[in-house]
Length: 340
Image 1: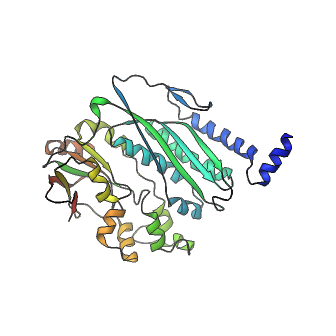
Image 2: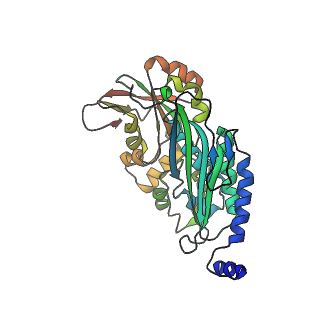
Image 3: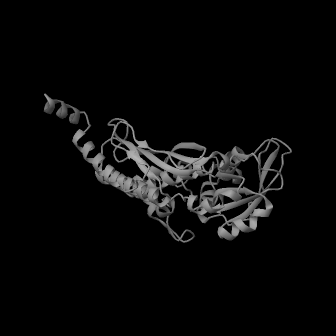
């Protein structure tokens, strides 16, 4: 009876044997990221023993890579998006002051492709190792009829920890504080639906191979630049910081207000850093309004730091790429972020 069931399921588009093989490949790679606190990861749930904290607060987040995956599929390069999802999630919990502990992934596609999944997982594993985070579990789903040939979805879930006394929540931010920006590597993982439309990528995938002198690389290479992880840089200076805002979907206008107390606003000075060429290219080719650019993209700043004026010199001495890009002011109207 068992062989009949397996054959019927395979005819329906799901290969159980291949799925088991893929899971074993993932498990081997994942074990190389395990911290000592990992107890087990092959049960119905993965276990992690929390230890060494006085008042531990767990911080969790989940996110996806979005339509950047379409670029990865068209170019046949999948390791970088694996790094993207880890780095994005690490940055999100970092905004609370949290250290990453463990990560889980979800990969779904119409038909399992071993080489595709291995590439994605290799990127996830590399990014996890770089921040000391355990890839403790996940799910690989074969879903015929839902995803078209070659396309897939990638989602990540992370848990970190921070001592209660060290939580970054922005509550101490006041008018007169300074806003420091850390450079991005490009689009990171946001705005790709607009970019695909601007360059007509779906209709003409060959445009990804076009070399742009101002980028110093092809469009495809630029669009697959890895989402930068800020945890290694910021870990030594967290005690000097009042608030962190990860500039992701929603840009400056959508993200900075999330850490601001009532009564204050952020004044961003847009000429205080060099806008990356890719954003100038998108704006020009797509005739995109400048205000919308700052609502959709990071414009070359992937993380913003809010600190007191007295801490600026020390932070920049430790983070030489950082630049002062604005200040906290008293709020005068409905706007929480002013960019000029």
